[in-house]
Length: 540
Image 1 (tube, rainbow, N blue to C red):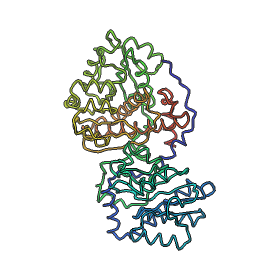
Image 2: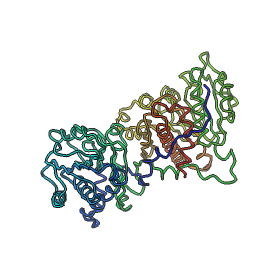
Image 3: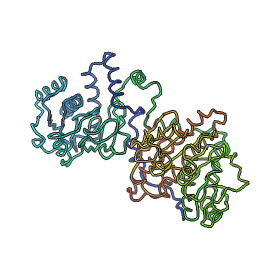
Image 4: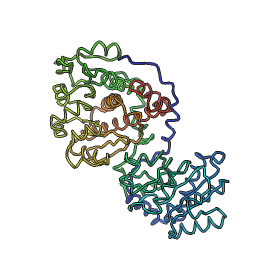
């Protein structure tokens, strides 16, 4: 396997466009959002004033992203509740800025405030269509039927309206949540609007972190309307348990800045145990991820038959050849390989199922440990999460769904909600669990959950997970080396930070690569070339 070493030359900025929507990171259920809004109203914020504030910020976003010169004709579909009221205020604001606005309100029984806004729309002379068929041609449709909190299936005439929206040849912007999606589970309630963009209001809702909802959400954006921190804390506590990775979060958790007088032994020593004769490329790809992380010293333990090939490709790494089986798997780690010298160990990519002694050896070490791929499969053979009970140092597990089911067959971990499944597995195993998917979930044994929605279908190919293993392993070694004296709880927190930063960084790099090369052109070596340019762009 010959690796390419030229730098990525594509445009990173376009892929980062959706990452700068603000620092807010709590993820809430419908009930929590209602309670937080209730805090505002109880404190004296009038409902009408909040609606005006929210709608004005939506209008600003629309004018910025859909300028009048290109999208002059706007249709607004408004439901009976306050989501519909938001849509009607947006319609009024856009009309005031010169857009040709038309409105359709399909349900006759409206909440009083929404009814007042519809009455004023009519007074202003903004056309109100009786049916969706009466709407004239439009360049943009704004959908505000139901928003968050819907529990009943969409049926009958409203289902027909949703179908009609899908037939329109224009972008669709949904307010807060595409109507028809369950706020917490992301499940489709009968039918649902397929939005081009969804403007989530105030705080992220759980649906935005559910893989099944992604096809309906389009591009997601948070509209921050300035919820006071005390209102959030009153419902979620000072440190919310469920959060979504943001640029602000990741910047704070990167192992930067470095001390001016640092040296390679201060910024992490990582051991990678990877590869077999059949899967030699996995060891190289994992090492490329580790290289991008900036780890100070990288050692690879590979089958002896791969050693010279790896040395030729990675001249900066220390490469240890291991005794191997007849099929070319690592038979055992060398007796003189001192595992205690490493700040972290990452094990699993390309090992094959014959490398059980190597996995047993790293499980018995005192180093923080990341297990992936066959490391996870072999852990399942050793008893799954229960085999980690005696480990004093933190463990990070990075399964995809198939590996996860083998490792955690307990019904408590079977939830389709990746977050709920990851939390159950983390509590059961005492490990940080990163469950890969279109919206990756990362759980701490204490119940803390992070969602990392930065992803792309470009990652659906072999080798992308190997890069992630090396990247997180390198970050883990750096965070551990910078904090030698720490409790187990603190170590687990650092392990979660490494997993969070690595998953986010990996996903954003993949998006940038897909922007340049399409989702068909992002193989492992190409993806590795985007990791550092993306980080440079983020830090800039």
